[in-house]
Length: 415
Image 1 (cartoon, helix red, strand yellow):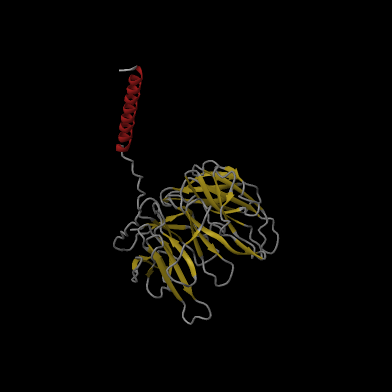
Image 2: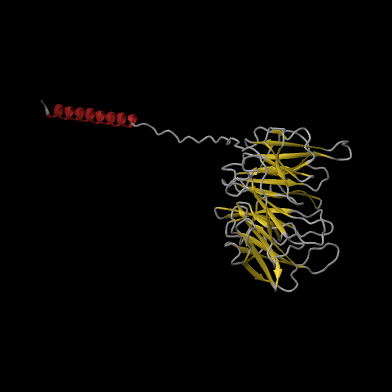
């Protein structure tokens, strides 16, 4: 064979071998399975598991000597929404804003800590973190005695993260909104409502919703999509909010306009965007209650509709509840529940209410019949705390004589 033919044969053999190798590589690559994308889990609402009703057992607790309820804490302790056993009270005494605490449902109280205050400080208030029972804000106020309902005195704010033992000063979210009214913290991110100073003509007053990621040293406002003012008057602001375990936010928008309905909004991105919650019926919503201890979403909530204007011959109240995040709404509590005052939704989903005659009641969403939980032991407004279990009821006695300060606190386990 000539050298030319030998070279040609060698070249052809090389091409065949390379082609075979490439085909084998492609075949091997084609045989490798492509991993399927991870499926997003479909969350389903939890079923209602409501135990049979029976009268709750109330226990009375006398406040200790030295702890006196006055005008600024007249309606009782500030409660920790995530811990039904814990509550706080602020009391001014001996040049101190004393912070009293209980961790056994008001059976025992101790002074957890205190903050020195000037002699002209006349009021002190506590705002307990809804999700962190050891964290709270303390606000003191020294009036300047200006006339006409002006709240123009000195306001100071302090923060504790260890149940009141130590306090550090904190500034207000803004100069315009120095009055904290509620607080909730999750994974190091704090949310708070802060109010403007009230005055005699408060058409321009409002609450604003803020977020902090540096332990409340600085704040960012996150209600720009909700807050509205027209011609110097507030037409919508956020008056209440709820923070879920997943970081989901609910906000209640209220209005200064007469006869205006409440509005409710949801955010899943720390308030950057808000989506309105659509209700199951039309009418004026006057109250909104959200079930405690929900995870990971706010599945259960109820809207209370009232009609009692001069144009209505018979006042009416209707309750509409959802157990599936607002996809469907259930008529609850009968055609007219005007004699009841719904004040909470328990962690099991039941709506809790009181009647003017002192009866404590509940109703299951979608049902019309109310069930008795017994009678309230004294005159007062009950409060429900979901805590870590079925929940705890708190009640501070309100004496008929307004000159006699309340001195007894009642607690009861909810079923």
